[in-house]
Length: 506
Image (cartoon, rainbow, N blue to C red):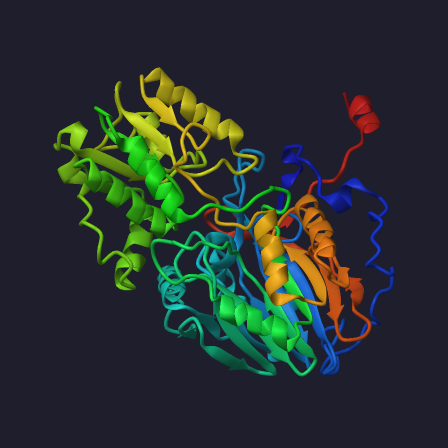
């Protein structure tokens, strides 16, 4: 079965828009020879001992769906396996993920899957794809808890091998020695990976920012990052999400202070919506509520799931107990804070149900306040506008990050990126995690920071990283799977239709 996305017209991908690839000084137009593997097996590149091959299957054409392969000495290492959530432009689809066909053909040479952190765009595909991957999974305690819960839902938790490690550990996985380095982000236990091989060391940053007061967990291990630079770093594959935004990213402590200010002098119930995985924000809401004599009730399955994982890992030990939904239903409204899922206007999330007066036990009314402690992800504006319209119609006051400092990003801005390049001093820069526009802005910044060369990959590009001959050596067509909520189906990307064809069809 396939899912034909042409039922609705959508913006085509960069490759679909252009019959000729965009000019790039890092691509020589060559393709690797079709090299048979294990006689009668798959064709394609076999990573040598003098090189590291980098192949992003997702995360380098749009934000989300992160999944990367590293090849060395005949073996492959997977880093992350996430999803990309979609909106009304793809009716009938909950999310997209990379099709692991390329990996599946080489499973005898895959040594494992390492997880950088537990966000859905980095782990959300694991429980769907594991029956096809069946390799060891390496994750931190918090991410392991989330992954095991998902595998349990699929009945695969006993068969899957999830190996838990502490950040700071070094993992030997086939020909790769992976040093895990503490960074800060908007979820517990984020890390960067220093992937050491006989051909050199590369740094896969994962998602990160420099936060001096992340509220929970460790701060960035600057000493480890500087040590990489002192040793000589071959390349860095680095987060590009805010590469076009000037300045530095704020701290979670700033968001906490903003929430405390926003909670002051409110008479009705307060609802806060944000990303459920941001446990630091969960603690900030609890502390802000306590400061004004309120109790917090968690609303939404994802919020409860993350709270369970955070409790198991000890991240909420200092936080007052959360109130049960049934108790909240008869508690005076001036004593309540609802911490809800639905910051992106998701139709089935808690805030959407509250805004439509469809929640079975809780409600919003005139005089209440809703605080959006998250920025709108591009593409969700229409859904959010609809939620705002419902709330205003109820007489609810809305507070967004544009109105008060109630949110900070989890990703580095330009000054943070420049600081990272100053610490690790890679010879080559490989921007990842973003759209082509994000990554090209990152590449320009990297060049200004003194890297020898910046290579901007698209999903499916095969990069050879080596002391000599670093370049894009080929491309595979990155296939996608669509999750309909019931099954995974092959996703057929839209076909670009030019303006003349549109006119004739009309």
